[in-house]
Amino acid sequence: MTGLRNGDTVRQADFKNIGTLSIDAQTAALIGFALKARQAVKGFEAVRRSVEKNTVMMVIVDSQLSEKTLKRLQHATWENGVLLVRSEQTKNWEELWGIRDHKILGILSGNLGVAIVRKFKSGV
Image (cartoon, rainbow, N blue to C red; front, side):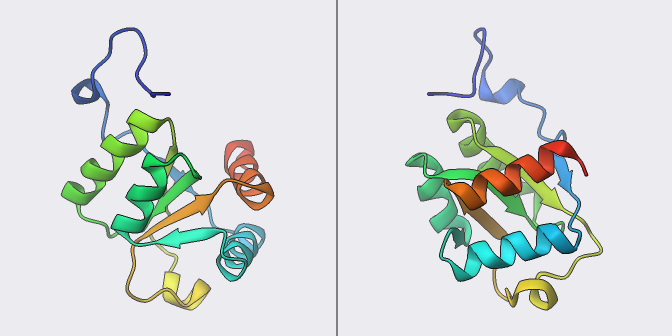
């Protein structure tokens, strides 16, 4: 399964067109619960491997992630049809979830993943 359609190439993908995840109290709680339930992976390599195995529903990146890393990650998510979003700039991951050293978070497939993706897509 690929995210490419009608002969498009990855180079034609718009790397600037990434949605922004609004992190309200409910979204923060869902992601925090996913982390405690081990339904999330952290870090570039862990997320990239999970994307390639199609075990991730959504990838969330910190707003401070470098453009080069973002492009590499978007290339992988685009090829595998995984949703990629950027978190709000005003949210500090260490304060929200205790994540200090990582700027990339993958939400695994499952009920929690479905709830978080649904919340993002509803825009509420």
